[in-house]
Image (tube, rainbow, N blue to C red; front, side):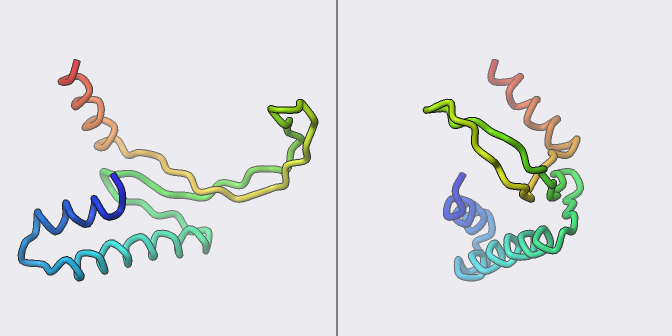
Length: 98
C-alpha cells in the first residue's frame, strides 16, 4: 500500500473528514515518527509494533559483481518489530487464504 492509497482508504472510511485533513494527519504522523527516530527515540504503537534505530558497525563487504572487497562505513538504520497483535492478525489472514 502506498501513502496515497492509505490516504484514500482513510478518507473513504471517514467521509466526514476532508481529504486534505486526512493527508495532513498522515503527513504529521509520519513526520513525528521520523523525528523521533532521528533523535534516537523508540516509537511504540501498542498492538502494531515498535520502531527503533540500530547501529551497524563498520565492516568489510564484497562487491557482488566483481568480488572485490569494499569498506562499509558504520551506520544507523531504522528497524521495525511487529507487535503480537499484528503478527497474529497477519497469520490468521494467511491461514484463511490457504
